[in-house]
Length: 104
Image 1: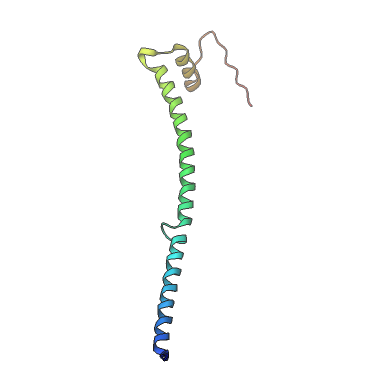
Image 2: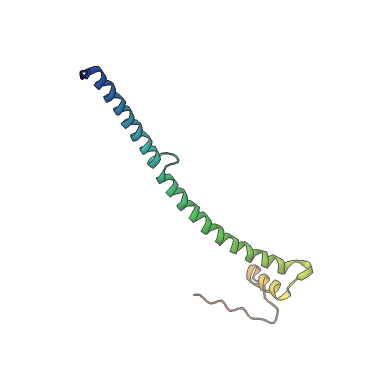
């Protein structure tokens, strides 16, 4: 003989299914939008890409500056480079030279 299904058992099952559904929704939301979710991961990857590009540009600039500094070291002083820097930065010219300033 079949036992009648009690209303209380149906309500308990419904509550259990509702709790499971709520938990799945909660965790799904946080997997996508949470502090460590997919959108955050995508945003951090973009920031990492930008930072890597900036680092590459800064490394090139640093290498150029180190090369210029190396030319100014007393042991390896490049007189032509020193003359170029003095003319450019300090506006110096030799006595027998004429300075012509041209507007762009």
